[in-house]
Amino acid sequence: MKNFALFIGFIAFISSFATHGFAMRVVGSCHDNVFSLEISTSFHGQVTFSLCESQESKTLRVKTLNIVYEENNKKSVMTEVTEIKDLTDESFDKIVAMYEEALAFNTLDNPNGLDGSTWCIKTYRGMNDLKACFWTPGSNTESRGLSGLYSLGEHLWDVANLKNNKQFQFY
Image 1 (cartoon, helix red, strand yellow):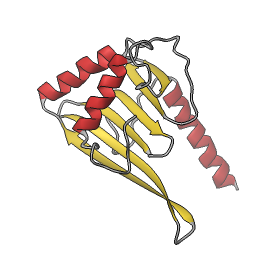
Image 2 (tube, helix red, strand yellow; image 1 turned 45 degrees about the vertical axis):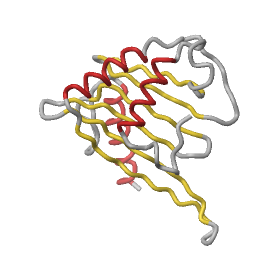
Image 3 (cartoon, one colour; image 1 turned 135 degrees about the horizontal axis):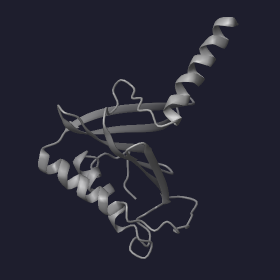
């Protein structure tokens, strides 16, 4: 029991660093994360894109999470796959420019729906993080001020080669 209490205390201590702006990165994650975009759909899984830049490389980390109910086993099975895609300077710069446009979203956007997708963009600027989430940016995109965000998501979807993947759908 004492070891468990020490473990919980250690986790709380480490978590306090993360919440106070200290950069803590997990093995396999981006060392210098420019931004991340998470697209969660009602029925077709979740995809998280993270644009990463280090002295050695510029990469796009693509994490897919899918939950499928297996009728034979009467249980749900979760599959998580992470791929790292190396980017050229040109491709990286294009994504950064699209990301900058995506940040021009309407902060007063408030539509909701039952089915659809939720898109969350998280920026990392200095010691501050910003996270904004939107319901189905493909719906009334221009009037909601989400054209930049939608274009960014569409481009990342193409770069990650997810168009032909039947388990993940873009909406």
